[in-house]
Structure formats: structure tokens, C-alpha cells
Image (cartoon, rainbow, N blue to C red):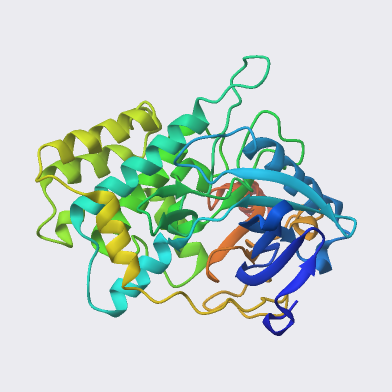
Length: 392
């Protein structure tokens, strides 16, 4: 559906404009009408039409709806409904009027500016409050839901003109209730913000999200990405090493207290991180309490008011080229039917940044070929013995 087709009716909704488009799904701003002239703006997420027949994508959307509809917190984008339009399910969510942190950082970078240090601390404190709520959520039977977001990134941190901070997109979240989650040994998420254990496709708990929140805090403070590798394999290697320099090395005005918070959140060993996201939020709030009073909501609103909206997202096709990689763009269902020799990528709702679609984590280099070395050494030894006995 191109922008020239909008606005247009869509079941009980009117699609107004496309907010985001990726390889799996697209998000639209829509209007719903009720009695006596009642109108409400919502965000609608739907699977791309060319994936509509793929049951795997539909299952993922259903799981996302069941998971996120139970989460009601001021720092989490609210899921309002799961609707069926034209025989396909769509997710109806609250519309957060504002921009994501990725767009904010890019706008500031182009203007040669940086996000105020204390404002960055406030944003991540709010993100951690939302994560802590999700991590501690329990199902209807009172059992832990086991939610891990797995995609904490600037693209999924939404800032509103009213100064709110909300975390979005539980589309690839891990939870005990999910039916469509792939088997263990599959990586899902954005390279740049993964924890080391996520990059190794190891079992995850809530501390993986804490690591990702620490990386996002680093990026908000410094104004650039933590990793700058030019190819996927170098990037994953850097992520797995979990080497995170103090943000004050890149920006002098950052105090030691924030260096310490980033260092603890991004510790390579999960045991050394904050015990939960609430503890990280408390540390950031304690830091802010010692600073000059901050009207965070007002500052966020003022910051966004001076920014232009992002360019309308274009539709990304399966033929689109991904810079700096030799990897193929694949769908989730295609990937699950094979074990590729190198990580395939897809685009997700992340401003065109490469996202892991889900792939088998390679074993450490060398282990795969140990038996070949042993066989070669044995053959050489046997040849030497035969030569000594009969050739000498």
C-alpha cells in the first residue's frame, strides 16, 4: 500500500499515513470513529500482504497481542485490541504522538548537538521502570510470565510531545506463554544492542534487557553507536566481547556516577549486572536527585517541538540491498527451514537498520574442525612409521 493510496478505509478504521515499514510488518496511523462524532487516533500493526499466507508470521502477531495486551504500565505502549480485517489479524495500539529516540539522536547529530546528560539518564530510568514491570509480570494463574523484551533499542523507545517515555514492540519478546518462539540456539534482536549471551544464542533472562538498556544509555549519552564494525561478523564479535568504554571517554561532561551505572549494567557476566531493571532505575533516579532539579517532561516536549518528523518510510522489499554485508534478506519462515552458513538478515521496524531474523549461532571458530586436525595428524604419524619400517 503506497502513501498515495492514503487515507483509505480499513475495516472499522481509516488509515491516515504509514509510520513504519519493514520486512515483516508495517505500522499505520489510523482513525477510528464512534457514536456522536467520537474519533480516536490509534496505531495499527499488520503483517505485510506478501507474508499474509505465512502462518508463522500470523502466529508471531497473535503471540505479541496476547503478551502485550496484559501489560498495562505508563512506560509501555498499550495494546488496545486484536482485530481481524480482510481475513488477517492486525494489532491495534495506542498512538504515541512524538518520535522514537533513534530519530531524536539522528536529528541532534545532524545539528551538531547532543542530548542533555541528565535527560538521557531520565529517559533510561523510565525505560527501566517499564522493563521492570514487564519482567515481573505474572499470568492469570499467578505464575511468572518470564518476559524478556530482547529488542531494547532507541527505535523502540518512544518519546511523546507531552514528555512521556514508553517502550514499544514486544514482537520478539521471550515469554513462557509464547507458542511461535523458535527453538533454542536461535538469535533474535538487533545486533548493536544485544547482550553477549543473546549474541551467543544462550538462554536469556531479564538481565539481558538490562545490558541492552545500558548500551542505549551509552548511546544517548555519547550521541553515537557503541559499535561501528563494517560487517556482521566483526559486529557480533564485538558484541560478544562486551567491551564498553566509559562514556566519559567520549564526552567530558559525563560524571563518574553515570560511568559506574553504565559499567554495571553492561557487565559481561549477568551476575555482575543490576539484579533487576528496577534497581537500575533507582540508581539513575538517585543520581538525578543529586543534580539540579530537572523538568524532564517539559524538556522532552521542548526538544521534540523543534524537530521535524522523519521522512515517510518507504516499503522495503526482499530485493533491497543491505550495505556492508553479503547476507541475504530472508523471511522468518524461510530461515527456520534451513541452517545457513552465515547469518541472514531482515529489515524490521527500525529505520532500515539490519536486524537478526533468527539464525543458528555458529560454534566458536576451530571447534568444528578439531576432528579434521586429529585425523590429519594421525595419518601423518602412520605414514612416518611406515616409512621408517620399510623405506629407510
